[in-house]
Image 1 (cartoon, rainbow, N blue to C red):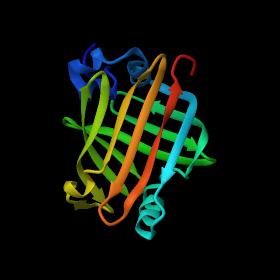
Image 2 (cartoon, rainbow, N blue to C red):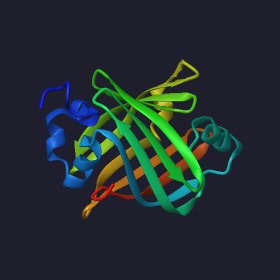
Image 3 (tube, one colour):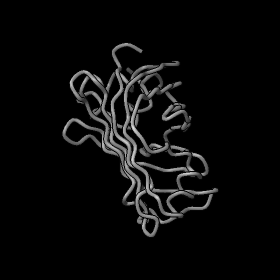
Amino acid sequence: MDAAVRSLFAQVLGPAFDALPAPVRALHVAQGRRRYAGAVEVERGSGLLSRLAVFATRLPPAGSGPLCVEIEASPSQEYWTRYIGGRAMPSRLWREGSVLCERLGVATFGFHLEVVNEAIVWRVVRVRVFGVSLPPRWFTGVGARESADGERYAFDVWASLPLAGLLVHYRGWLDVRNE
């Protein structure tokens, strides 16, 4: 498949994408509008800086329960809306060279993705808030891991910052067999 029709994640990961487990590939090859159901558990920080950062990036509320994720995907960009605890958490993803960019609220993150032990590992390489670049070293506590749990797609996302501490840590699964 040529780059013009390969999915966004397949473009970013290159040949390593093909070695991922089937549930991870299934989520990331689908094009058009898809809806997935699953479950999520969310922990949130309680400090003032943590609450402000969570508000600015529209991160999910604390708790556990059902999760719905809608993805509108094309080879050039993806729009994700995660419905957690009665709230929508929208983001837009696109590629800039080898970096996967994600806009969440007022923040735009640039991630280096790599496949490690059959999982996609996300590491922050750049951040802009209100268009202002911030030092990536402030964001070493931000990342994600996508893997398979049997036939399910599994995810683990964490964000903590110096001074603010824990912003959010959420993990769970999606059923990618029946959208």
